[in-house]
Length: 122
Image 1 (cartoon, helix red, strand yellow):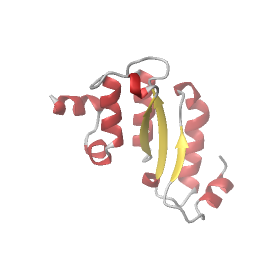
Image 2 (cartoon, helix red, strand yellow):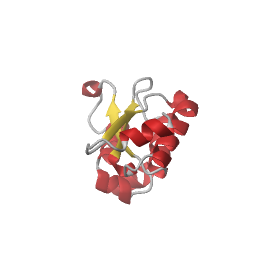
Image 3 (cartoon, rainbow, N blue to C red):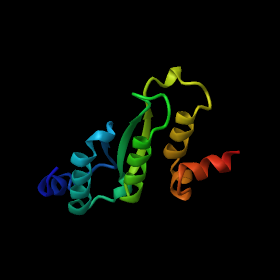
Image 4 (tube, rainbow, N blue to C red):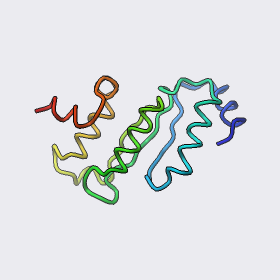
């Protein structure tokens, strides 16, 4: 992502732009590109949806999952959790709870952390 590409994308008449951040390990490469886009684009960051793949390596919420979600939230992007092999995850498992918290925009933006959301659900 360059400043010029971000400016060109902001001129396109579309509702949302979707990105993906599947691997926590890519943070050193991806975070600066998101920053460049946010600073160079005229698009509202809340209209920039970022798919976050969770559960592909571990069958539980990981520190890397939480880092990606909170980094995106802290920088004004709208994360959207995609669960790997969702149909085989048990109902009510922590990964499904994470997906529900993040993907429900009202709950996500009004609740500061996943732990707070979990406390409210009990």
